[in-house]
Amino acid sequence: MAIFELFSKRQKKIRGEVEDVYVYEDIPQSLRVQIIHIIRDTIGQDKYEDRARGAYEFIHKALCKEYGVFTLRQHARSDDNAIFDYFLNCDDYERCLDIIEITFRIINNYVDENYYNYKQYTTSSQEPEDAINELNSRFKECGVGYQFESGELIRVDSQYLHSESVKPVLHLLGSAKEYQGANDEFLSAHEHYRHKRYKECLNDCLKSFESLMKAIHEKHSWSYGQNDTAKKLINSCLANNLVPEYLQNQFSSVRILLESGIPTVRNKEGGHGQGAEISTVPEHLASYTLHLTATNLLFLANCEEKFS
Image 1 (cartoon, one colour):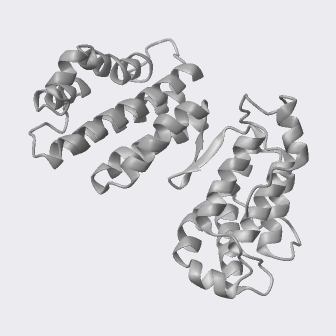
Image 2 (image 1 turned 90 degrees about the horizontal axis):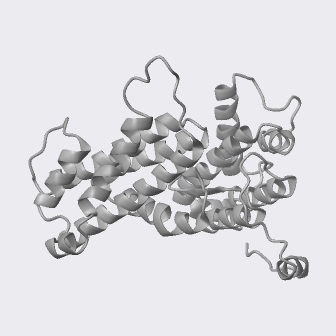
């Protein structure tokens, strides 16, 4: 369903009352209601519809099992009623995000693959792709810093950085089978970041960076060792002219930038033993590393695309 530019919305924009700073630990009630509308428009109604009922039953059982309970809501009339009632009244923002993520995974996968049947036999009126686009638009509209990308909720710090680096690299890695390992590790870094596990975030950033370079080596049959460090892999990529020589000459700092970026941050802040003192990784450093990783992954993957 289209998002309408209502009179009240236009007036808020004119008055400058549009959210320009993201929040992460509050899911407004109006947004929760909008999300339920999207879900019902896409999956359909539980009552009288077997396919919709099966989807809601799966979501409800999965959540109950993970939370260690028998039901999300006692005496609920149906699975979707239990899910939505819990979602509307839940004080734990992370559990709200759990519900959004698992439900939109079902929409992105199961409903999308069977949409012809959903369209015929349920009250579904919205296509899965449109539902995901609307969800992401609603997040932006409410100033809530998450986007559903590649089957997961990704935390967004800057919409510009997300649209220019994170989103393109997720699309590029997700569409190439040989980059699946790098893609999984990059998504895992985002998951750690969302849950404030910043050391683990840095570790997975480096893993993703190294996995991409190893995948490129395997694709072109370049020799490398499974235990090679990022520095060795970078040097090998440059020695094999993955980055064109004219570009290396023009930007003599390419090697230094790659070598001193992700690996150095990770080794100093997230890797090795921390010694007697407990070290903490600040959020802004994890955010910087995530976006630096996205930029470097995109740069190397685009170089490989041109190299082929």
